[in-house]
Length: 236
Image 1 (tube, rainbow, N blue to C red):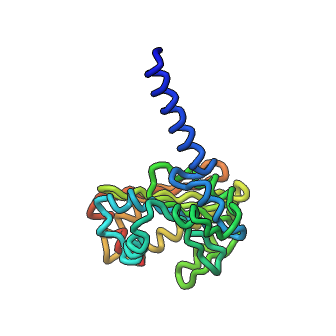
Image 2: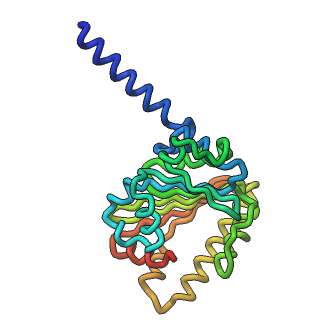
Image 3: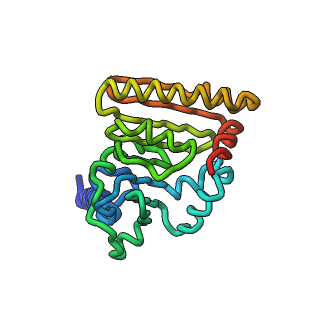
C-alpha cells in the first residue's frame, strides 16, 4: 500500500472514529453524547423522533396535526428527544445539547439502552419504566392497569409507504406477562366489538398479532397506505 493509499485509509479511520465518538454509547442512532447527557435525572418516559426520516416518509402528510406541528417547530433538527417525569417534558435536540443547554446528567441510561435494542430503522420510539402511572384519563387510563406489573414498556413505529407498529412489554414475572397478554387481548376484543359499525377498523384491530415469550409480550400491526392513513387519523 503506497503513501497515498495509507493517507486515504487513515482519513477514513479518523472519520469513523469521529462518528463513533459523537454518537452516544448504547443509544439509538441519532442520539449524540450531548443529547444523552442532557436527559434529566428523573426521567421515566423517553421518546425519540427521527425527524429527517419522518419528513421524507410518503405518509408524512397523513400524520396527526400535532405531530406535524412538532416536526415543523423543530424544522432545523434532524432528531428530537422528549423526556418526561410525569409532570414536565424536556425537549432535547442536537443543537440545544451541543450549545450546552443541558437539563440533566444522562439520567436515563437504562431507557436509552432499551431504545437502542428496539429503535433501529424506526422513526418514532417511546420507552417507559414500568409501574409508573401515565398521566392519562378516560379509556386511556386502562394503560396504567396494564403496565402496573411491567419492568418496562415500549412502542416503535416505522412509517413509509405503510405503517408498522410494534409494542413491547416486559412483565416482572412470567405470570405478570401472561396477565398482560390476556388483558391486552380482552381490551382489543372489546374495542372491536364497540366499533362493529366500522368494519375496516375492526379488521385492522383483528390483524394485530400478539405473542408472548417468557416475560416478554409483543404486539405487531402492519398496515398498507389506506389502512395506515386510518390508523393515523385515530391518533389525537
